[in-house]
Image (cartoon, rainbow, N blue to C red; front, side, top):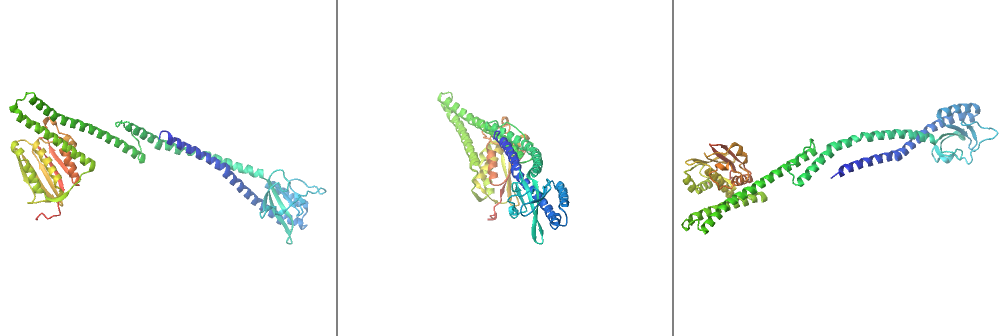
Length: 474
């Protein structure tokens, strides 16, 4: 779009001006002349008819003299700016207001034929060779006792009509120029409101295409162009944020993989070169096994999260007893809870509580939340798991009395690999993906998950599930 849109608009503007002048010079000129010719012919015909019915008729009826009629027609000649003739059917000129006639030398119009008008009342030409230039001639017959005695013919030069038409065309040209200049306002508006903002947008897209996602621009407009600019700017900021997140993910993945791999390599090399005696191999092989389990967990979480993003989440919804799933998940942490002297208190609604959800995915949610609660709880503390029923929803709460989450970190805990204040973390084996996966699973069910936390007091996660239509009394 470089300089082509504006050029095309200017070209269209010039073409518009050219054809405007062309139309005025041809069609309008011709139409104006024809209109003036018809108007003039009509006016002269009315005068010729009036003369034929009065002065000329009186002349042929011998009621007035030829001199009297000549004087009257001379006055009309001046008024009409046209020469008035009275001519016999034979072509002999009786009266000519443009010049005096010599009785001894009569003027004869050779080949005079009143039918030259071809059904009209006027004709254009030299009038049987009587004029050197084109003339508009109007006929009106002089009748007496139902007999044509002669004709009143009024002539006016076509050049007079051409001058009048040109005067009107001059006005048309002036109006066209004024309209052309006024239409420049459209060009100015186009430049300011369309072209310049589009240039900003085009330059911005070039910057983004070159990888400069930090380029910022602004288009102050509330129309579609302003919306396009805002959308483009927002898209660039989202891409930039995505790139930053990608870099963080790569850095975090690299760090989380490098640490256990370094430990595994160090312990294995120490066992091979004898730094670690053979009797201690079992202990350190256990450490190596734990590190490999950590790598496996990280890999599985990455694959799981990537699958959620690329293909969406496929849910196999069934009706199951949520209370039993909660009990089973809590039981799986029995060993860990004994080591940390942590108790899990279950406050469940009813003996059984059927929900409609993907049982495997909900087990994963419960496992991730309970694992986090145990990880950040103090020794000799209690973790409460509670279910409540509201309308057609079941709300599950997992509440600990651990270290809590700083207020500034609450909105970021759902981000991948985010770990709140890692220097204080008691468990360095976390991947930072558990809560991201948990949120994706709950949202895939069309439900919500929220967190309430106070630093130094504890944290509570609450998520909802759709209650099953299956009777809980079964």
